Image (tube, rainbow, N blue to C red):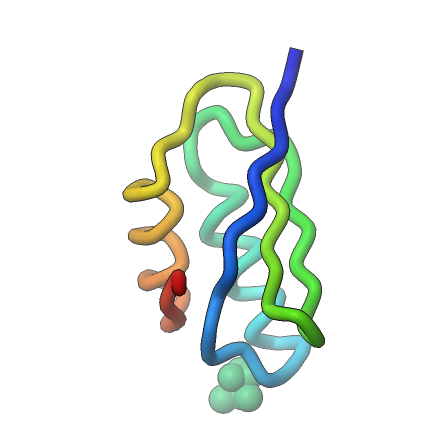
Length: 68
Ligand code: 9UX
């Protein structure tokens, strides 16, 4: 059983940004998939155990961007 949450991220402007965010968020415990849409800034995070917004926020910040 997994769930997918969508977050809005500001600041991503290229494919390298997308890869950074994907890598950092993917590294969080419990995350099974990350899909970033560069055009919209939407980040879809699929998890198999609970992951908090704060954890996602910190991972996104680690990559250099911000959750809305
Ligand atoms: Mo290059 Mo994407 O600095 O931010 S990684 S535009």
